[in-house]
Length: 383
Image (cartoon, rainbow, N blue to C red; front, side, top):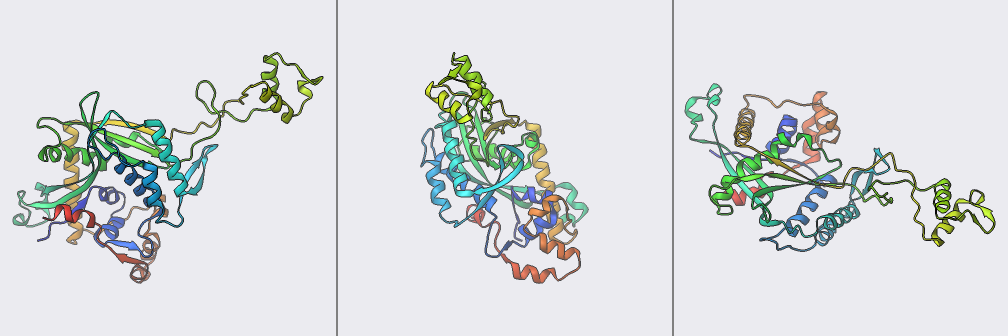
């Protein structure tokens, strides 16, 4: 019997919508003509650039992330990514993906430099973990076929980065994230990266990458927000300011002891004339502090995990695998979770047609092709 594989990332899809999981991971359906969305293509490129940069071992670094990104982006004739307008966080706009990647990775390097504290153990490392049958599986199948000593499924995934701190000596997992908005509160319960942390210690000890008895300190989430840098000036406290008005120039020139220019009072001069006078005097004039301060473009957020959390995470993996097996065997049917996120699902039209009782199978055959969703993991796990 072939043991099914479960990607760590697909659990997110499964928990969001079983029907989406079934079509994507059970049937392997991919839209014809475009294997992935612009957003997914963008995130893949940034991950590749960072994987090559943090090549290791130790403090060794690879090609500049921007160089890797530039080579990667040449394969896409045109792609756009949704970002927030820095002047109005309620407004979204689409920008050229290639230019956005260059700006983001340039800003990333300027902020973090060479990350001398990160001693690289392993970048982009695949893993596999056998999942045994849980005891409650006997409620659904014959006891003989669900022997706990047998393997129910194999969990596969990829760690973005494993590193050791030069300062503390502790070992960490790194999870690179590109996002339109950076949200942190849910990370203590994040299943995908939590699974990585739960499996990594044993995997890395087994392969001699971390010492026996050593445990991972936790996961550092390395966020890169999909946004262009804000070119507005900042005040002394680091807040962005608006363009100065005539009143700001008058106040600045008056403060420098200038009350008139060529016999004219400052309040009688045009804005352009006041700007020119401020330039001659070497005055840099700022406007009022903007009411809209953009969120940071880069955030690193460490999350520490405990042994109890590790056990809870592995139990959830086992229960997800059990539900997937029930669906594969036809003992359950996939359920749908209808939310506004459906608007971004590649199966939306087909799902809607199915709901209406239409010929959704014909649409499936016309609009999708079948690909192996586990191809990247078969060489490393099928020995």
